[in-house]
Every structure is written in structure tokens, then in C-alpha cells.
Length: 284
Image 1 (spheres, rainbow, N blue to C red):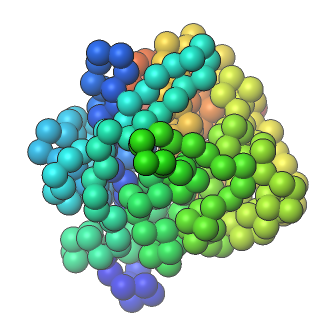
Image 2 (cartoon, rainbow, N blue to C red):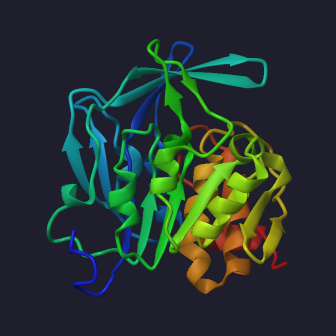
């Protein structure tokens, strides 16, 4: 990647590992980077995708984009088990490799839009990507919040972690779910908001909140018949950051509509193009 400040910013770059998600007896390809790539495709955007993947990885969701794979022994693999509405996650395999901006091909320019998509704290170097001089940077922060114990069980503390704080910068739009943010102390929440362009808290079927130092704007949900909610927040984040150059109102409207479309399909499946999303969602 071109060093900071040396060249004009160009295009969209998405960074993060692809995954295998184990659900019952099924092995499903996923990862935030896969959902972000599907969203970019649907919005007519060809992105540059930097990912870590093992030889068994399914990269179908990344087709149509310029992809650079850092080869690792194991694709990141997570087991999902459910206790009613509660989902527990366990790490089966990690990539064993922390991605950095220097892993991108030297020919790739500094991106105008950067989507940083970790799933575990060691997936991506938070400070190094925070230093990339993008115009807009989307950080899906769940990976930086997660803690993994010796058994591989994933938990989330009720406060921002050091890794998350290192990922913050004035160009960052930070996306987290309400389960991750609502337990934070008020002072911690204010500190995070002061360090970023905006904090976006997704609330599932209740929409989302866009929080800045100026106040909070609520984003109404778009009605949907839910089939699979996995990845809906990732789709919301990608659609928002890809559209925010057209104004925050447009970005909110499209993000809500794409998230609704995402829950109506299973896994990181293709999404409707923008024309169909626009037809489904009137201006508000």
C-alpha cells in the first residue's frame, strides 16, 4: 500500500479474514469481509480485498473484486451454538497471522474508503490500519472487543478494550451492536465518541443509532421477513460507508434497506442491486 500522504486516495479496500462457521453439522463460509464484498458488488463497487485464508477457504463471496490472499495454514473457523436466542461462539482454528497494511500489494493505492473487519483481536493490527490515510474508514469493531479463553470460548467485556481504542481515529466510523455497547460506562462511551467521526450502534429489528458529539440520530428499520440475521450488521456497515459520500441521510436509508435484504437470505449470499433496493425503500 502506498505510504501515508504520498499519493491521491483511490477506491475501496476491505481487510479481514474469511471464515468457516460451524453451525450444527453444517460448515458455512462467512466473515465480515465476505458480507462487505457482497454489499459492494450489489452497490456496483469493485473493491480491493485483503484477506487471510487457508487452502480450504471458500472465496466465492469475493468474486468480482481484486483479491489478495495472505496464505495461512488454517482458515479462521468458529463454532456457533445456540441457547434459545443466545449464541455462543468458540474458536476452532485461528489464522495465526495478523494482517497489516504492508501485506497489501505495493501497487494498491491508499484507499479513499477503508473497511477494517476483524473477527478476533489478533486478526488485524489496529493501530497500523488506523494510521492509513483514508477519507472514510469503517471499523466493524466486534473483533477488537472479543476475548478468547484457553478453551477457545469467546466473550465480550462490558467496556472498550485496548485493541478497540487503538483502532480509533477522526476518520473512523465505528460499528458495533447494542449488545456490545449498551453495557459500557457512560464515560467510556463518551470517550469513544470523542475519538471517531461517528459511532453507529446497530439494534437489529429496531434499527440503528448514529452517535456523534452533536447528538444521536435514530435510523428506522426496513421491514423484513427474517431467515438468517448473521452478517446483517456487517452489511449495514458496508452499505453505510459506501454511500456516506452521498450524505448521511442516504447512507442511513440504504444501510437499513440492505440490512433488511441480508436477513432475508442465508449466509453471505448475493444481495439485490441498488436499483431494486431503491425501489423497495422510498425516500424518508
